[in-house]
Amino acid sequence: MEAKKTPSADLNKKSSLFLAIGLLVSLGLTLAAFEWKQYEKGELMDLGMAADDFEELTEIPPTEQPPPPPPKIQQPQLIEIPDEEEIEEEIEIDLDVEVTEEQEVEEIVFEAEPEEEVADEIFMVVEEQAAFPGGQAEWNKFLRKNLEYPRQATRMGIEGAVYLSFVVDKEGVLSDIVVSRGIGGGCDEEAIRVLKSSPKWTPGKQRGRSVKSRMAIRIVFKLK
Image (cartoon, rainbow, N blue to C red; front, side, top):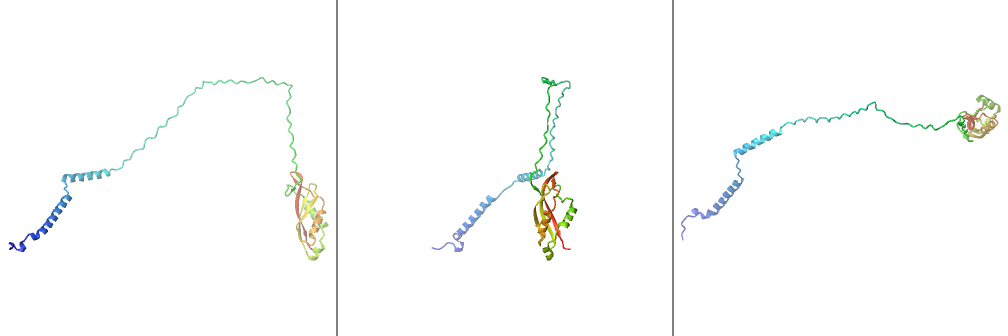
């Protein structure tokens, strides 16, 4: 059977192409129809005016409010009391006590305070210190007269000061003689001997009373 048309004029071959083009065009129109938005002139004008009005509202300057008035101070009420009113009060005095000349008033006798008993203790510091009778000058005379330089100290050339500690009791008697620092060579023993041979000392006093007190002296040994 012979064909009636030429192969180039056959439209059946291009039907699939035209179908695809038609589908694409219809799809594009559909999308355009959904995405298309139409605004009227009146709405645009309304939006513009609303925007302008909003800007004007936001630019309103702040207003200062005056402070509230201070609270009223209530004045105290003064109540007047008339001076003519008198307060009457009865005072009862009991006069039943009788005093006769025969009654005697007992005299109040103040007993003298007992004297404080001073214990037999040794005072390290007293108000009046014990001393050799006659003072320091007499003590120096006593030493020059009674002190003998030990021979051993003379041979060895020993000289210096011997420090002594002792107690003077209430009667001025010396006791508890101790060498605090010696030099040896027989000088320590000689210093104790001379101190023991001294007469009674004037005792120390505390609050006007004779007390036991501890003394400290030095006796100097020096070669000529």
